[in-house]
Length: 354
Image (tube, rainbow, N blue to C red):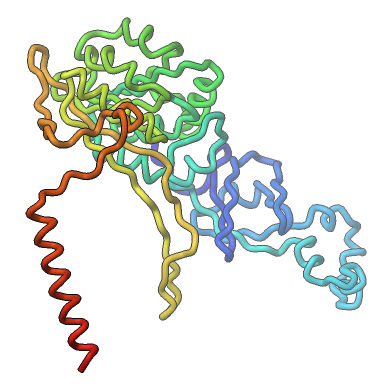
């Protein structure tokens, strides 16, 4: 649902001040929201155009008798005491620019139960997972709805999203956030509660084009995932630790039902740009998680994987090797290195004697 025109009661708006601080509120007639710079009166925002500037009020001064609201500088100074800047905040007068939040802004500001995926990771899931309008997508791990809302946007009303969430309370939060975002519950969305294997067992074979897994143990869900995904379908898994990543990648390879996994992470850094002062900001969003992307093989065909080099052992633990051995270097290479170094030392000595 695309909202245009004046801001209406019931929708969320984002207010940003001159310092870049943002406040996100849902407009309710007659309600006020307190900030550190005074009170935002919702009736001042309802009916305004996007891009308008609203000014905070002081609830305390509005309740004073009209005769006591003097503009006399001496009266103002007396009421503010020795810290006039605090009086300025107390009486409001702080400006905010009003806009409808972008999807990324909404996701970061919405109430959450489970930790959400960052917009940078969500964007990669949709791009690398090749999720497009009209597709049938299965999501496991609804959480607070950040990924789900973006998937609903990506597939559109011509597609369909099925979300499986283990915990009923998280499913409630997920559904509520999506309902507030759209103004109603999306009709192209099924939200199912239960563990992945049990719920997926009731889904038809090869009924999904794409699968997105955001859960603690995605390696245990590969069998059911392969059954319900169409051949060639893309599976994208989001994990946060290296141990999860290693176990998932090896399970994908061992199954023989998925192509060689592609793994990456995304780091985000903003920049300060003011005239000639152009530099990276000191803070950045570093590691948040890993994305593993793989595609489903057709039944009866084994995936093609790179052959392991016989001289390269990356699986045997160091403690199981029965003692460490020196790195194997050929005698010929050692003799060449010694000969070259002796020649350099000799030249260095001759040069120092001159």
